[in-house]
Length: 61
Image (tube, rainbow, N blue to C red):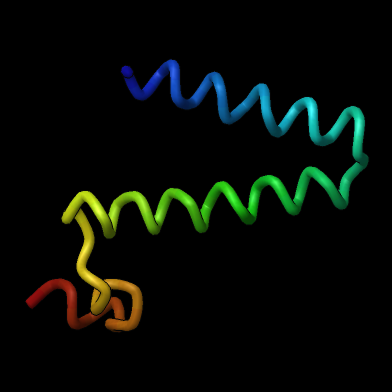
């Protein structure tokens, strides 16, 4: 599945949550989507757990 399709599905989910559930539902769906994205990247091996806790200056070294 291409990233454009994934982005379209995420945008549609946020749109539906905002329309039917209000702003609180929109924020909840956005936050859970971000958590799902981080967990997915971690499980695929694209991200190390230390990447979340390292400072910005440490990444350049």
